Amino acid sequence: MSQAEQRQKLREGQGFIAALDQSGGSTPKALRLYGVEESEYASDAEMFDLIHAMRARIAQAPAFTGDKVLGAILFEMTMDREIGGKRAPDFLWQERGVVPFLKVDKGLADETDGVKLMKPMPDLDALLARGVKAGIFGTKMRSVINAANPAGIEAVVEQQFKVGRQILGHGLVPIIEPEVTISIADKAEAEDILRAAIFAQLDALPEDQEVMLKLTLPETDNLYEALVNHPRVLRVVALSGGYSREEANARLGRNTGVIASFSRALTEGLSARQSDAEFNATIAKSIDDIHAASVAG
Image (cartoon, rainbow, N blue to C red; front, side, top):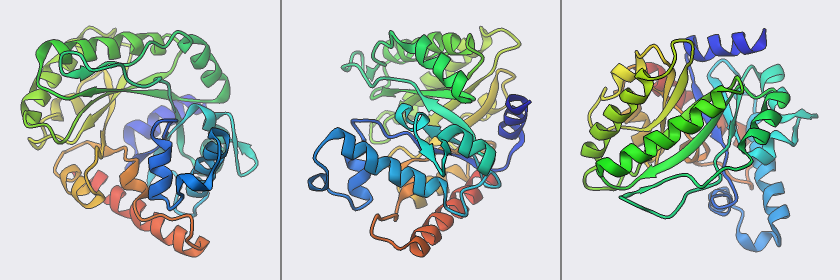
């Protein structure tokens, strides 16, 4: 019954989704922000040990519970490791009441038509089967939009939903993430094109299937409200996208029905040098602030 309980929690819960899925390319930056320099590890294995220690510390913080954190997105390596003596997905759901998701994309291809599509994922079916076995509820995959180019945005959304249907075939719920870069001059125009492309794909889904959407906080407040209410959408979540936590929370609070799925904005202010008391107080404040913004709309 846990999957039905997890789906209900995500649909009705008052909270947000933590993004703890930094991959090989983004891990060094995440560690630097955490106060760990590249000189402090000599191999990828040591690097991933350090980032796992950070994630485990967050997941075991007293404030990191399903009361305010509805779900957490994990890196593939995190899924296979332990937190608190249990496999990470089991720890999250059984001990914390937090629904586990898995990042499945393998990074971005070179830019074409103002966008970066996802790289091919030839081993995706095998990874999804492992995820199901490990107790994963859903997945996340990211593309990037750098210009209001209709052909490029259409290609991004088409690829996302094509892979999404493959994920749905394994009984998992995909988080579709076509990120619009926050610094582009034509961001608002790109978001209008993106919304229309997403609607077309959602309307083509069978009635018994649902996806989640992870979108950049829009320039026009409530631009995605109709997506929030679409019958094929379980939940719309927002990425922080490089905004400070203060700015991200302010924008989020102006978008009805959208909840956070923050990564860097969640971990802002955390340091490997903090005592447990300092660390726990800092992450508790982050969780409280992001939760408040997520329920404000």
